[in-house]
Image (cartoon, rainbow, N blue to C red; front, side):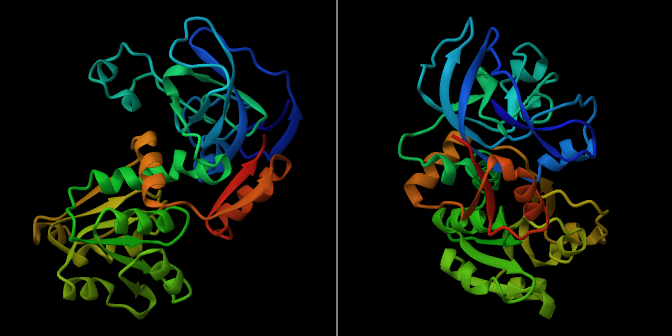
Length: 332
């Protein structure tokens, strides 16, 4: 089979031929149809994860069909459409697993990071990490829902915001353009926030009730004029910009960070004491819930497709924010 691998930290993407892997006990062999290109791949490429081993095949937004089943697998059928996201499996035995908190497993696997992922014609996956994909979901269009979609949908769904309350989406990119759609369809008064005016028209088309340009300053003050935000979902990895939004929160408002800023965030603690505000992070969510909500509401990612052989081009464009808005590898 053809696959893209990374042989060492900092190495380039490499197209290789490998034997089709055999599923072991508790595993499924999946014939990959599509795999999204996500910022999480930078962790593998840069070696930014403890205990990484190489070579490794990246990719954790995978949709395909079951080709073969290993021993001790039940509940799945050959030919069934399935997907695999960031969570690659868990032990069932640690304290977190016994509480049902499988993503917090002490020995959890990460697809495309600690085990091989979907930048390949075939991949193996733990059966407990596989999710069902409805027939009506297009594999290429739906692949980004396995990570980007479930993250922002999960963050909004779990935010505590109620219908009619003000929710601001900061950053209109691969995550943000989905978050606007989810926010509007969840019944929130949705405010899109970005730098410049080039994304204003699209934001309004996607469902935002209003657009704020941070380059003109006073964004927090504008949010306060609207009553203050119950939630500001930050999808842009800019620590300074996030800090400048804190004073746009209403009482009991929260900033939820789903991006991965590299710089320290500096702000006066009094801004949180003012109005019982908070800042939290979110990296989880239920994939199947996000998919079903997307199908029901019509909230879908805007994508640009690439063949497997152009994975490096897709990754570079994604990292440079030159993809509108999610890159997907068309494989099967």
